[in-house]
Image (cartoon, rainbow, N blue to C red; front, side, top):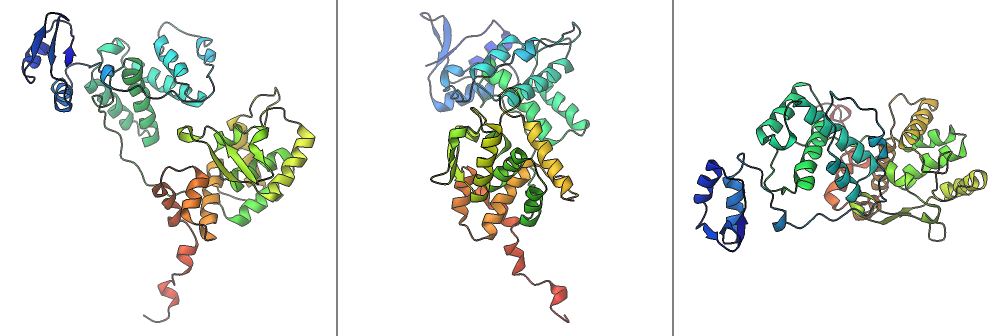
Length: 360
């Protein structure tokens, strides 16, 4: 059965009477209806926009991410003012229990605080779906990007769905349409020039690994010494996106540089470490790539993600099967990898420009 507990309310009582064959249980002191998929859907549809529904008893908990524990003491140590509303303590607790990545925690906290401060005189739990939509419309009026809007939605959904236990199927806030942006690619010649203009061996290894193994920046920073398999010429990537492990290619050229780097820097745990022996920072990696491209005379802004895109595109241009590229990148489906077919040069070289065909 589906039991319905609620605070006395005339509107809710009237809606409950409209549910399929509602009955009263003396044993449990609540109204109930038969537990079927159709009836459960009816409950959510009937109360949409009227009341929040905590139906977590009917839905499996999302698996806890297998990332390392996140230390968010930085949040507690912030200087605070009485005029600003801060994220609830239970929000922080759930972020830690779910082991979200540190950057994700910072984004969620920042975005959720902007949301609750948009309604400074209202309690969070009293906010309706319409007020959430009004806030999103406010962001749209400020010309915020689709990525920014999605971050705001994710932070709000996390509170209501994860912290408050309200299921995903009820909480239906519209997302902006996905924009189909083609990946930006760097040529092989430009990447070689970047490596040649990088004298710092550590920096050269960072750029080389990002490109030659097709790594995300976070994957590079999480690499440990034992993840470089020189016998099999593979790089082991652990706990990547969607908590998946995978292998990628290890370049002979980069392996030679890595051996030189190891002798000079002697990292102890992580392949690339900061001055205190902790993991290298993401911003430092971005600066290394930017400076290398500037020294090479490249006018465009080059990012670590562009090196990963270039790895996939160049493999495709060299005739590598797209299913292998999918595996190396860690994509769940070849549909994600297929976007590189739209920027691979070999697809355009076979087409003759009509201006070059002679007289028309």
